[in-house]
Amino acid sequence: MSISPTLALVGRPNVGKSTLFNRLTRSRDALVADVPGLTRDRRYGRAEIDDRQFTLIDTGGLLGDAGDITSALENQAFAALEEADAVLFLVDAREGVTASDQDIADRLRRLNKPTLLVVNKVDGVDESRVIAEFALLGFADTVRLSAAHGSGMHGLSEWLLAKDLSSAAHDLAEDHPGAIRVALIGRPNVGKSTLINRLLGEERQLVYDAPGTTRDAIAIPFSKGEQEYLLIDTAGVRRKGRVEGTAEKFSVVKSLQAIADAHVVILVMDARESVVDQDLHLLSYAVESGAGVLVALNKWDGLDQDQKASARTTLDRKLRFAPWIPVLQISALHGTGVGHLLAEVNLIYQAGELEVGTTRLTNLLEAMVSAHPPPSIRGRQIKLRFAHKAGSHPPKIAIHGNQTKALPDSYLRYLENGYREALDLVGNPVHLDLRSSDNPYAGKKNPLTRRQQQRRKRVMKHRRK
Image 1: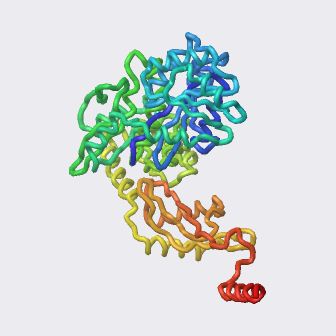
Image 2: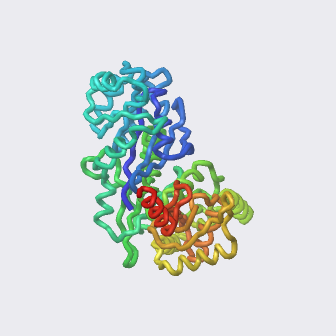
Image 3: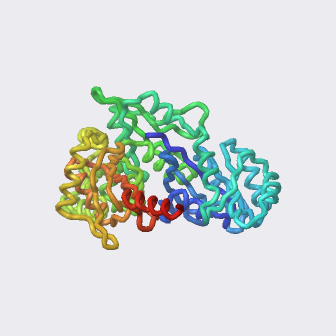
């Protein structure tokens, strides 16, 4: 599991940031943070290029609707960029270089971060003019593409994969190759810091100051018994005196990094508060990224019986999209239930390894197909022939057959749930890799048998005589 760098999309309004965001994340859905004081919501998502994950932040309207970097927004805008490992600076090929582009370019150069100039909307534009005009911005790394039509995306992918966008957390992970990476995420004041201190068995400031970086590294090594862990902490984002400042506002970035870097994610929630959309967005993001997931309802001992029943009913209803996520009731302050957390983390991690053979996976597939056959597509029956392990963390199962891409979402959920239940994949999403056998006669009309081909040769030879 590789450490996921964070990419910031920046540029004046209407240059195509959202279009590129949607293409990179392959979705129209995104985690949206409603941050007070900004003209628009920021959007966060996950991009995957050649099996490498990236956390993506669309800075949206951070630079003002008029296209100017206003004094009220510039600090927040560039604090967001401080969280990024690299910057994708978008400009509009059709409009050419503007004064706002020049201002943004000047500020980006001061950040001293890897920056790629992305010249968007190049379809139908004179390429030589575009190259000459945008060279004036002074960026050595430039790609030209059309985010709307997908042309030129290969150059962007090559640049991202070629760059070394490692972080301090990456160094810690390399130093502890056998450690289980556990991310604690959640809103402010739900008790993450208290829980971390309880897990570590000591009171200390949970910040690792890595040389050469302006942000806190978030991986804290510790061990319980013979098992090593890396605790990926997002609690250190809040700093005294800056609760309403930019450090607090951009804690979502650290949460997404932590999710992408973790084997197991623990979402810490305050049992006294209702489940909010931000919690569910983070859970959905964790499931999509393939992390094992666990919910810790903190401050449980402060509730009476009616409040406990109401909290569980509400959470069960909100988690209907993933009823397989374990929920533990704890009190980080008093230690109640905390001892069970790491035991559950170990179970989820071991399940995510998916130690199972091809025969077992294929037998389970055959049993599920026999009990509930897949539907027919245009009169042809979808056939699922065999299955094997394709990866771990998340458990990934390759299923071979014909027309597998035509399987409806409902049947895929049936297969995922069947495998999860049969293999006891507690707390883990199941990813299916559908593979269809190639038809050698695809695209050919009335393919001839070998005997027919030989006969045809004899006829043609006779005619030539």
